[in-house]
Image (cartoon, rainbow, N blue to C red; front, side, top):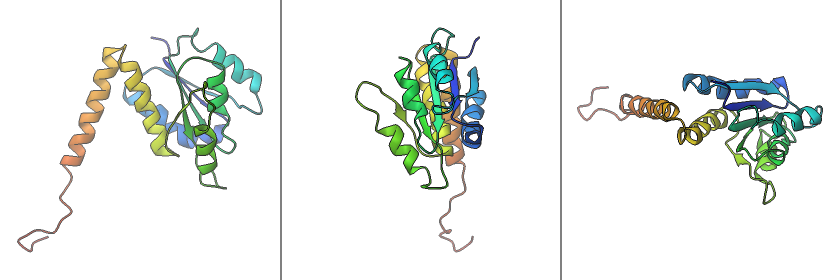
Length: 168
């Protein structure tokens, strides 16, 4: 199967965040591709990537971006595929600048916006899996297994409350 999800980032320094997206996609068995395409330094590459994504078989794009965070919105402007934006935590404003840049897309250019950093990167992969699961039963099953494993982990956790018998 060819890649269903494109994972793009504005620079290779964003990999520390987007690696969590890739790990989650791999865990779910979702084929994906990874590429650095900068909205500011390589706009033509970004436009070609986004414009040709559907033709290459991609069904979702996950775009991580820090700082000005134009990558998700510009990718969304060049494709009708769903684009999920992951704000990368920055040193200047802790990723809030990235979050606000992604979330403020104008009407007509939808960009799904996730949490800042690792949580957003993981959730972007899970949201892509939920979208793809409507068409691919094996992805839905993998997502259901993942969610059931999360539930078991929470239920199997030791009770943090003190024992009523006075024992710890």
